[in-house]
Length: 574
Image (cartoon, rainbow, N blue to C red; front, side):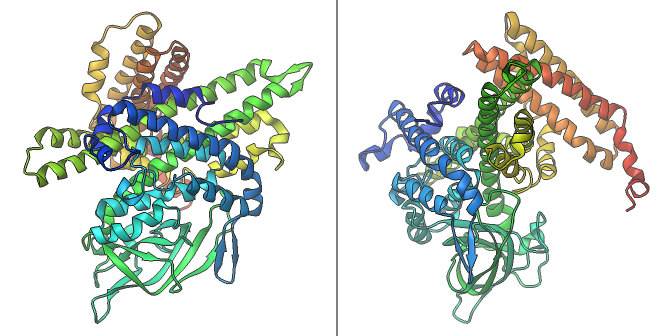
């Protein structure tokens, strides 16, 4: 019987070699829960054993329950009749089994019925669920809504809403987008007002809301009359009761099991989360960053599924008297796919660790301050990981979601004409992958979010440290290639900055972000190659391929191909 955790040697490698000790200590508050809950770990060894057991459960559910239902879920889709949304039968069964396994409060504290797991472990679970059925991730992965309530709501609100998530009694939705406010959330117009008794109500329309039919909704609304920008927006929580009308669900290219809704709020009772005016600039940004990490894991899962389909088909399909996996062109595609998979997974879990450290250090600092204790070291660390997470989160989403489209494309190519037919899973995977580099911020927006850290060379000291180490053999050669990539990056960065042309700089940002990702991921793979010989092959293919791509990035910048943007109106008939 397949298990999407134990059968995937790279995920197992990542868990076994991942340093989660400090994160575990932070999240367990020095393991104080062990005195209150008999299933809470008493030390890091027990905590890591718990992580492995939970991932084995998710891997089993993903491989044996969720994946076999995915094709029929895609065909049936979510239903909409008389204003009521109903999940596909397979989706209902999968959600029931996840709830029965107590997997719906993954990161929430135990006092609310949660598992109190690190975001890194949750991200691993999202990858496996997404490999089984990408559309189910859009329900399972919305646990971030509960996490946002846990971070910013008051105690009464936490007591009310969080146990519902943990018990699997409620699903959620983050209700942000409007017909005239897509990526530009500052343009949100849905109105929040207080009645004569001081109770908050919501009026207006939202569109493209993933799982908008959910039970508990986090809603971004304009609470300050007369404002037109993000400073007039606040965050609210409400129930999806009779005052919230689902006007339609979208007929989509992919992820059919996940209903995407248009909602109308009609004097809907709601509660303010946190402080007024911080809805967009604080709470939504935190929520969106969590969602972007989740979509990165979703893209990772889709990529793994597409690779497995391609590998299986290449072994079974015979042409010219031999299996097509023996054809060098096919082998090369598969090696490239596998290299991308493992390098992307390294970047994904490095990002998740940074997010864990950032968030859990914030909690530690709050506890220390409440106890009147100094938190100087923790504040310095938190500041460091805040910067790292702010760079890696958009970079990760950009790289992994674009890769998911490439990998599913190549997988379909290996299948040939048969892959274009609905009888084969790769056709569904190719459709599901396409949304990942669009929603929760397009790839272009991720580049904008990442470029600040790239321009400021955030990893400069870490790269210096890597370069100062003594390496031998193949690894030494690979580090020399990374040094060359870094040299090219620095020259390109200087060229762009000296040009002092904002339009050119914006257009060149994608090349610079890609170059920086080669360095970050390359050194992650260098570390891994020192732990397992097989990883040397992955590191070599990735770094050599990155060096070639980096030279292409450099040519695009140095040849000033973006200078024709000044003639855009003539070229594209603006």
